[in-house]
Image (cartoon, rainbow, N blue to C red; front, side, top):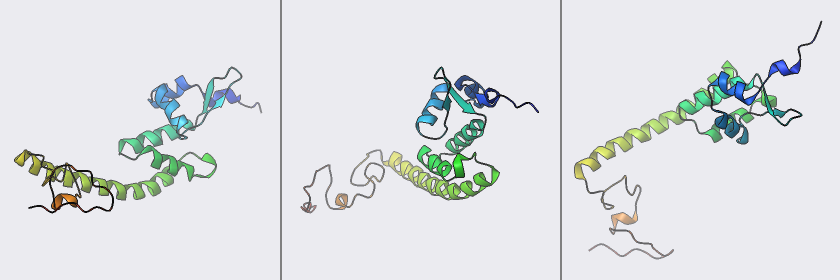
Length: 158
């Protein structure tokens, strides 16, 4: 039985771009970040295995829901022998990512609610505004911006 030439199993960067919908520059970026890999021809041209299509689809789907590239790279690195993610991998990872997304959605709701308060007041006061200066402990005692030397306590408000 004749064997299929390896070149039929490989895609050029242009072919991968056309098939995946990702720009060539995005594919180069994904490769630089370790999300996909390529081999080189004797003419030093990139060649991607066909499973790179699924990896690119995985990366783009995860990005669309707001998963950072570093988190995507970590997830792909957990797969044995750089295996292409399958349905079970996506189900397992999406369960973990769902929790992270729920936390971010909660943060966005809180920001939205504080934004409404800020629009109502219009001052962007560091004294009261949780958007301009969140978690400001010093702001409870003094107003305005001040650089405090380490170890020195801020003056009391009068």
